[in-house]
Length: 302
Length: 219
Image (tube, rainbow over all chains, first blue to last red; front, side, top):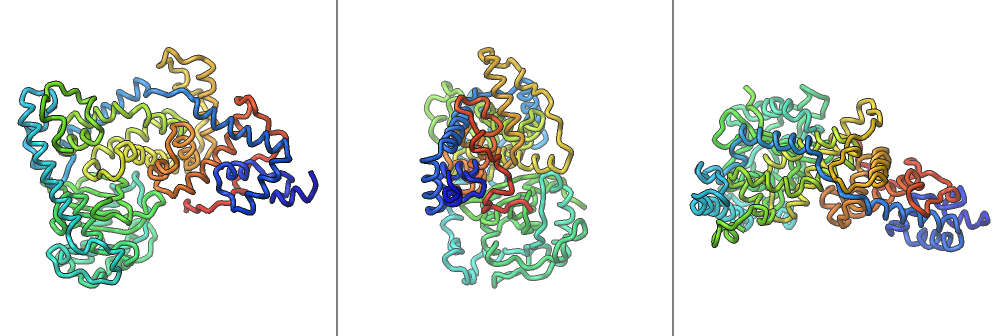
């Protein structure tokens, strides 16, 4: 190995380091660097060995025996799910909540199975029709018409203010953020809560910042590029399985969730006035892909 | 997906025969048992991902429970663009990464003996296998959680890179990059377990400072 070799290998210490070799394996190196490193490895026994070790490590990982959930963890999971099942009998929003109670049985075994299955099938069909209608509805392609003002369809009229606090939400603190979210939203539109008319892609009203709990820039209208109001409406429709505009969010805020860009949308819980549903979705949430991240059902503040 | 298997001869139907998507649909439609069936079907693999990403059985149990409750509540948001397993994995991995971030703010838990490794749940496990698994777990625990998750999904659980990318919500190149750096670190820590392990010549232990990071994700 000469000094020239080392320089060509692109690493001061004389050999490409393991990161570089691992990136070579993954095809991540730029073409020139890849060529240099390959040439070095071809003549360097140590680096050949190091590559072999990387491969052996992968083989070791692939050969790990499968694990099974320990009994105590399995019992804990069952208990947690049983608890959420009894405290929240209806996991769904919108149309599917009309499933009659008898259908909530174990339809593949119960004697009333045929009717139960039929009820479930009907409900799913209804949901599917709504989803399809949402997909087929006009103005569902913001990417193709970024500056277009939505035509006054019934759904487009029902847009609402979104704040953009930039706040970083977490699963641990989300419930505590709900009163702040709702407070900010109510102040933004005191007379007709959360139903501000919006025809130009801008949110009207400048809600206060969420700085009651944490320093954050003042809420500003949601940037078009991040989440257009119409897309938010579509997103809500997709989340609820209801037609666009049928459910008006109590609040919607653009920020991040555990470090990743996200929208936090607070909706009234169907048929449960004392509760709200908090959806955390990606900012690309739309009619066909909600980019679901997190869900929380919690008590409605105030 | 609303009609098929429960029309003709429903009495024969064992829920274990139903596809994932139908179980999830049944859950959304109000069936009280469907989600539990779905969980039982996949929980071992989800547990493996959580345990190996977090490296700690207690943390893994916490994360898995949070994730499954979240999935239970959020099932109505599932759409068929992704496989149900991908959707479940995504929720579990998100819960793990969230928990890892919260743990970061606290003192590191001592590397206690891993009860899961001693658990003779599988009578076929051999001692050496358990020891290897334990050492891998300890090594994984030293990686940043994002790297560990990528390595676990691709190298241990055998997901394709594009599947892992979908689960992690990042680009495929980011998955490769995380895998590469994670493997480089693991190769050093686990060299004694692999027969060709000889890193003395290559010498350099990868340092995070060296990483040509294209991803700046942590605030």
